[in-house]
Image (cartoon, rainbow, N blue to C red; front, side, top):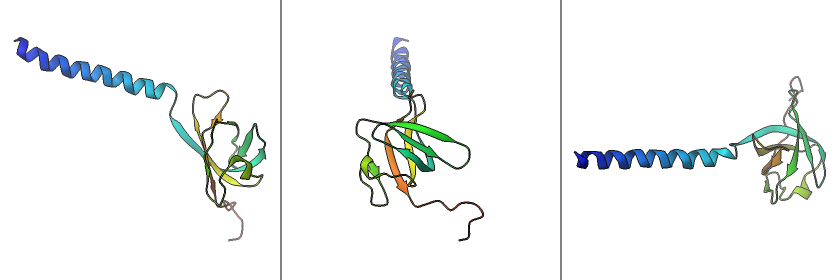
Length: 113
């Protein structure tokens, strides 16, 4: 009987440890993208973007924010009017930008193509 219990106990232990690892990884919050959105205001300390659907969000830059796309490589390259996708964590207060991807300008609805 104890030979049957040992494998079962190992399986239960593995499941418990796995759930703790998953919970601790999720505790910080899942990273999610916001955008595409146009930069309305940018400074060394803050980025304000508007997705043109009623959502305007402010982000603080993370320690080292990777910036990519459209020839941009750093926070200093970003300027008002750039279209971006910002990766952030849902539970951050204040919101922190962990990654910024510059994307081609989004065409507005009703604009001639």
